[in-house]
Length: 134
Image 1 (cartoon, rainbow, N blue to C red):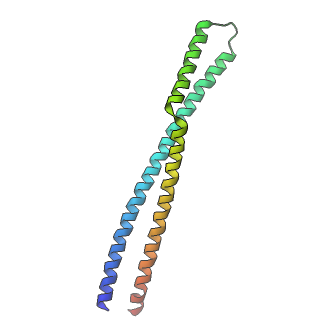
Image 2: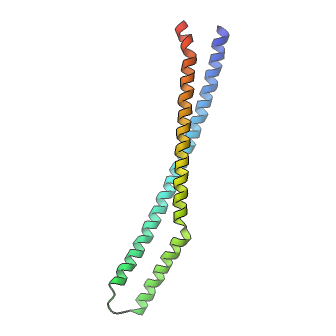
């Protein structure tokens, strides 16, 4: 009986170490998800900034009465710069990559939590007979 108790204590210690490891992994997954969310937020802010520039340019184009070629060339240059920035930033791919990463991290975190709950339940079931014997 003493041997069983010692074995159970060893098993409990091992499972606690496993649970600690899983919690560390969950923390890392959570941090990665937070970073993905931050990257998505930055990408969104960049898109919004570029859209504001484009809308301002379109507004200016709608308000031109006499054609000022210098102003028109300046607006066209700004519009082309904004388009190039949008094209070069590859935002659609980055946002979808961030979304996929976030989903993967959320699933991984959920699985880790399920494993930890299962381990805790197993440890409790292991010790119930010993507690009942006392």
